Picture 1 (cartoon, rainbow, N blue to C red):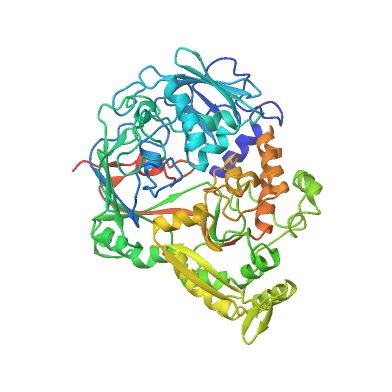
Picture 2 (picture 1 turned 30 degrees about the vertical axis):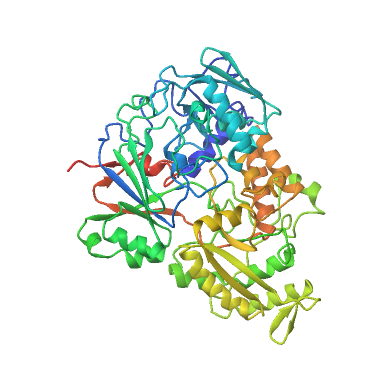
Length: 606
């Protein structure tokens, strides 16, 4: 129902079919800005629709992570920090609502202003905005944060920086960003960058900060204790500057958030069963049905909650690095997908309970239609007809097996594809024309859990083709270094998308970042057609054009055979101690996102 309402809203907002981003000309400062149309919440809203504004404060939330950590700085390319820190210790000028496709409301900024063409955006800081140490947030801090993150930070921040022409202070508490080119999403993305304290780095390197201390942000939580590789404790500031803002009412309710680290998923699960940690997310429907019937669940001390989500499926599976042989050949990648017996693996792991990811945006209005491309989608793809993968225009579907362990028909197809690519069987081994065996390594991190189980099944299927797949498991620090340098042949991937994809797609598959260390373009794809579809998405001013461009991108990515998809995670499964709760009657559009828990949960008083 949420997807239907979203589609109707996109189709009916604005005059006729043309949707002008942000509604009116926006000649005046506003409380928020939407990608399409106007923000759903009025300027005088009192709280977000999916929170309990009267939620009590208090209690400790204990979260469990696998592996370890060697840094408290989540904003740089080096180190392996707890992933939660990026969302817990800093804030942006704006806050993204989890109940709208893409709308941001003022957080550190009290207002936002941008012209109709969105060639620039201006923010006015709240006078009361403070860092966690009590010092005021200044325009100087804002400008420094964007410059530093854009030049020294993680790759996720550098893309935005490359599109900013200048940043300037234009009045008391006012900062303006002027963009190099028209991109209607940029004002929203600009508002979401973390703001850090410039003075903290007056006499030290931003990239050198690791375990000595965490960056100082403005969020309700700050790091107050840690034990290297074991735990990190964050404490809520009772005097948090923004506690009375409508955007913050009913959120960030726990007094303390503690992140405990476990060697692997099995140990973590046992820790949860013993209630050493407060909650666990379960991604396997079969395990959810099979393994969550232990005494604490039966007694009611642990509650099982299922949280719906309206987001697209995203892509989860095994990604092939196309920068080098053998996966730079689409015929080889196609063979690898045919050899992957999804139906049998899915039945074995999930009891067939979880549907397969059929494309990158499947399960949403943004997903490609199966069959030949039509209409505007076809128009966008046609200029690239001679350079895009087979199936992008004609239609492409993932191979389907009969569900038996042998997968005979698809194995025969895989053999034919490999022969066409120059691989032949020699004494039971698959070799190329130079006599070199087809042998590659699947890189996984410790605690890979389900990916490791799937790999154990997959390796046997590849043996039938004469292919040897070695599985290399490394600790989190080594894994991150290897991924940063693209030092892998195949590894696991998981990318989640919103209902308003945009510049994030450049980070995932843009040609400009394909060979940038730390880039999220793991497969190394460099495709003018993909770049053009992303450009078309960002330039769209009508819902029809936006849908068409996204569906065209979906076709290119899926038909490119870069990832071997597994099952989708169509619902969030959270097991939690009974004291933890949330407003189950008002779950946001994006359901179980990284913001949903812990942001809108609370601990019930004893």
